[in-house]
Amino acid sequence: MKKYLLILAIVFTFTVIFTACVAAADIPETSGAENNYDNTETETETEMNTEKITPSCVLVIEANGKIFYANLEDNPSAAALTEKLNSGAITLEMHDYGNFEKVGSLPWELPRSDSQITTKPGDVILYQGNQITVYYDENSWNFTKLAEIGNTSKDELLEAFGEGDVTVKFSLEWGE
Image (cartoon, rainbow, N blue to C red):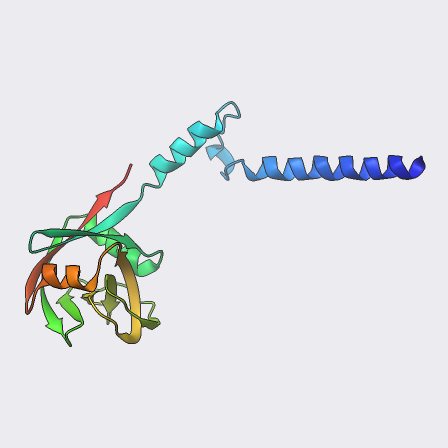
């Protein structure tokens, strides 16, 4: 009988500890005077407030009347690009290089975090900190990936970007 009571006491103790840890993890972190957290707020309201604080955006790329949407990477280079494009869209003359990418000079430098990668069609890459490239084929080199165009193919990209030079507009579209 003592054995069963001991087991029951242990289970109860772990249940209380686990519940306290889960509840503590749900409380947002604030400091000092900023702590105005109202415990009556529902979980749905908390999620809605979080979405308003951290909206998401996509990189919009327009070439020859065709629009592509690229999901930005989670790195300092993509964050810096987002900050720059918050001031407005940029339009670049992009040139074909090696029959696998279009390259254009950015009006500013972005931080680099290069690593050895192999590109694929739809990758948007920062090269040397001041060049943006849109790949329509593969290439391996030390690059910083900025974004990736989803649901597209090499042929769709070639159709939009064409042969030779092309004028490309880069902007942001914010989600709600």
